Length: 78
Image 1 (cartoon, helix red, strand yellow):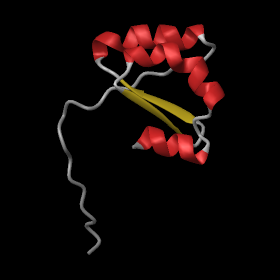
Image 2 (image 1 turned 90 degrees about the vertical axis):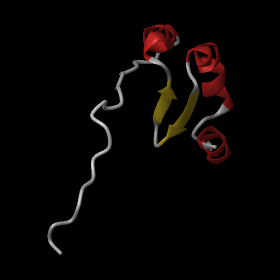
Image 3 (image 1 turned 180 degrees about the vertical axis):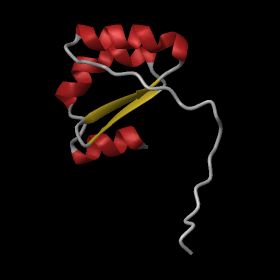
Image 4 (image 1 turned 135 degrees about the vertical axis):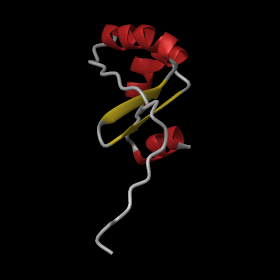
């Protein structure tokens, strides 16, 4: 749904999708929002995805989900 929304509002234009199309095979999904292109992939595909993105002139940065589990934040001012 995020990718379709990105297309509909113009964040993910045909020229950008054409440019990154070959890299999409390394990702489960991708979308764009506020000039950020986000790919979701598995760790064992991350380097291949990053290399592919570099090959089309992008400068990827990798981030991993925390393995610490969920955290609950409360507003202690109440």
